[in-house]
Image (cartoon, rainbow, N blue to C red; front, side):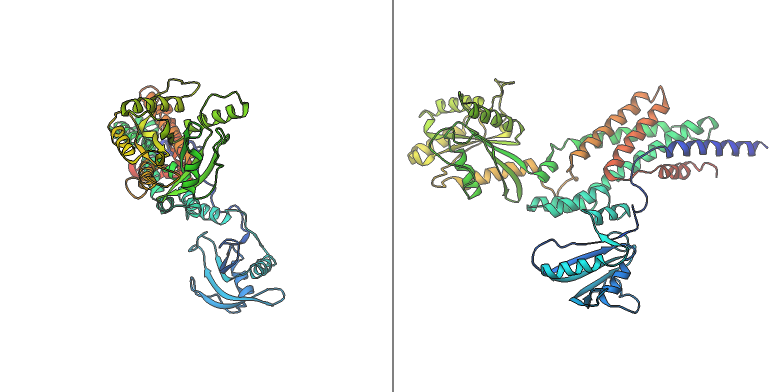
Length: 510
């Protein structure tokens, strides 16, 4: 009798726990949003030697039989076979190419899939797509729908999906390496490990709330949870202290060219772009708006901005240009302050004092007129060195490099290209430091949304500590919120997994 009462009490407690855990939202919907079969050109538009048309969904086998004229069975999986590609209605031969059959679940989307490798002429592609559209139960795919189905089928996590998107849009070598590393699942595995540990912590706390009075939970469980939560907090905080290197690498390092009028800013932009991107004129104040261009500096992406010359002006348009220039400098990862060498005093010490004051005047803002420039975010470019005698230039360079407090100095001539190689080497080094090496160390944050969810996660973990000794239910809610924040990054969080841990670790009801 006593045993049956105890078992009944356990079952009731487990039912209550299951109900509470299942109220935890997050993750993705189970299964695919619909059962329609989709098709699309997957190899990009434009004339090419070979184009790939992809089909995914339950009608893929019918499309393969109708388009390739296969009457018996289906081809061996993942084997390329040469077939005539026909219109299933008129039986007209549209092209001759390769067909590949990918039966579920061993395909990119997890569904039955077919690929048609055809010639890449626009007429051929159009005719094949029109023929597929005539097959019952098929429709053109929406943007990103193949990848969405792969995600919903559990083939990819959200971080891997984002890595795939970044890989497709990668324009530099460093971006490719970072995207490939993320697409391989390394970042997702890190977040999944944190999620697993958080699920275990939550399971232990929930079990303690419901079963501790029956002496079914061993002593010290909450102390173990405390240690695990502290370790997680420390790891997530270290992960967040990455100086946004991954985000910079993904979107490009913001480099701003700034300085006084007629210092050669636009000439420097054109020299780096190797094209006339900005108007160059001896008339002061020619540039009045921000001129942007994307560059690849040694494999790293850079968004280079030329700005209006900084000076006091009564012209309303020029004043707006100066305002925009200062605003862009505040947002910059690196500012190239261009100075006309002819404006420098002959004496090295006086030249250093001039540069210090010039930097303050260029980098100051209306809110912070006495701003102190950061040498890590600044590079001094002394332009028009071709106007200096060679011995004077060498002496100036040697003396200025000895002055403490000045940012790195590069002497260049945009007119003769003298010193540009050394400047590019220095610029590449600074950009590389800002982005980091995408192949070494722990995987870095690449998305602003990852950072936001991780910050929410750390705030929720702090809630656990805040209520740990006063209200354990509120402390558990902090763990649940932290788990939901992590689940929003990866797209996966489930209450059933928490229940599995409870029954595995505590053998409740066994």
